[in-house]
Image 1 (spheres, helix red, strand yellow):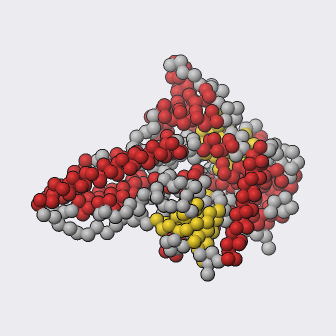
Image 2 (cartoon, protein in one colour):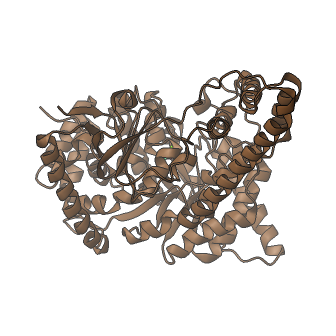
Image 3 (cartoon, helix red, strand yellow):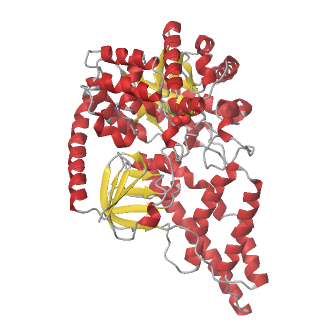
Length: 592
Ligand code: PEP
Ligand code: MG
């Protein structure tokens, strides 16, 4: 009988295949003492395995660069450095010589020591490094013990559904989307980095499932529906039929979206809506363009720094920004300055251990305290502005003083570029992400100092409702249709309109049918969504009538509960969009 498990639909599409359980855990290393004459051989074995791992990582780096781009390939740098760390290698070699331990046991000890030392700092940045180190630990120990490498996913076979407790970005980038047809994971949220990579690769993914790795068996048939967030194990004839039907529906829909990408982004009553893309990495720009994006509303730049041992240099950044600008020659490309902190920690910054990292040293707060990091980025963005309509967008702004400081720094960098004779576009726009209740309530003042607003509804919802956006357990409480969020959206839109500046939304809400409908009704006519959602959102927009959206939004703004907000929208939208197609994905509450 088929078993149905639900989780978070995190990467679109439907995939059916055979389960491969990816156990990339640390193996049990048996205690083995060695004879004195074995010492030299074990030490040599240890060093050989490090060399092997290095070669493997370099190959991985090359293939990632080829497939996804140079920036994506850099995520392997920290691991390569770890493999050259004499403290690690020599420390293990000493255990072989002095304690007469086998190479595997010696390395196991040394790694446990290092992990213990790092963990004791309690530093969140270290967790990232621990994840990288664990990745290596698994690989090295399996090789030393002569076991098959569980992180070698190059020979998974065809039609594979990867089932796992959790993944890392380095494992995910190795997946070939023509072979790995789906991912089902116990952990992870839509914003986890490996999940973002799975989306970039276009692999249907359901994460945050809690139990899938315990419930699934190797070789079992499985269907992953990344749209509605469902995994079916051992599907019976009935389930197969349903999913084949859905697959056909999706295929038909995909053919349709190619056509839709070419259509104008206008409502049924001819109101133009600017539909831009959110990018996590420069390599996605081309896909966004093909999917019909009218520019980039949010280019997240954290991939340049997260997991890196060194700050990215100006040239690297310039190339990354320029490549996106060149993909959209006559359109807006909004580069968001580093949104570090929260759940994204680079290794080269000494980030303090914090009780509440999302309320801590984050985003613009980090940038203003780290002028070397920030100035380099600003210079790179300015230089890239010579190649297109590049805008600068500052995250997590709470007050005017922060914008003033950013403007001062940008001006100083402009002067330096002018002095050095380096071209840039002095007419660039500088705006802010409105993503805290403070910014929304201070919008009148902030609008005087900003060229545009973009509302980050992911964070705005998190901070307004005090609901951690990364918590799978709280996912149901993370509700952008809460009246408090709706009122803030309405008020920010009004403020921007009367200040004469553009207001857009770049949070996930813009890709939700009810969300897009509400935003249009609130007069927010620029939306930015993850690139795979572009055709679908355009299709929705083309079926909406502005008049209906305005009427529904007016009622929604004064609705007393989330349920009633949604009811107003469902009522207003009915007739133009079939909401049942989205129900699993967005957990859309239905009106009774
Ligand atoms: C947001 O907060 O809504 C947003 C778009 O930014 P991010 O998801 O990167 O925090
Ligand atoms: Mg945000």
